[in-house]
Length: 319
Image (spheres, rainbow, N blue to C red):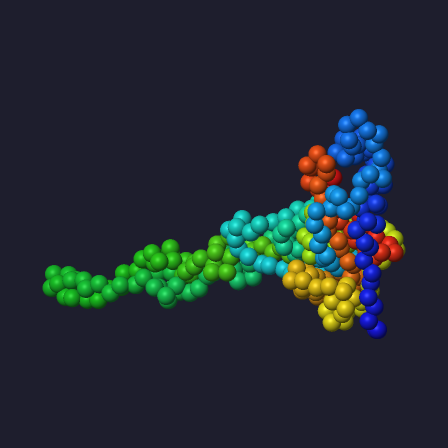
């Protein structure tokens, strides 16, 4: 792309366009701030030379983005936990509700769903809550046998007799019941699904404007450019590498604020370029931005901003 230098509007042109615009919307205020008592008020008597006290040459960079906010990634996950852990999980329910606005959602996009909770019989204990094994105390017989020394008859002959009684460890059943380690005695486990939040699909156009003047009109200017971009003249670039190499040559001037603005806009552009939900829909526009500091005859201070070239420019003011 060959070097293109854009011509900025002169102060008189900017000031004249501002006068005509304000006079149509608030003629009385113009007369109050610039008129002379006892004299017939005329816009011709208001000149840039008299009321513009200082001027700065700045720049603005603009591009547009189409942002698509839609459903979270497809797919699902599943969890199986014990009953007490269910109560410790944060569940969500969207039953009967409309789809959500993704921009207003500040939590995870894939969440546990309350309606998906299901009871699952514990396989380890087959739903009993405990496991049964042969009692180690009685060896599975259900009884304990002891050998007792008994003195028999008049001669008191010592004999060994057997004495048996139910095993106290297994209550005479021969089996020992242990708490199921899998379900912790609750007989069942509980599974639930982790699913995408039901977002509505919204496609929005979004202007991105960076101004070295850091004017409070940045949002308003960006919104206007999105609608009337053809009514303002700037220089178009296909990438920031090209723009950075030709900013000063294109504008005919440069300062620290403009350099910072280019860097900030480049970072923004890269982030949108990497964002899967965003699509950059325009080329990069470089606009001259003239900032004029003015003071009325009554001493009220105000500013005028001009965005664009001498051929096509827009004005903004806090008058």
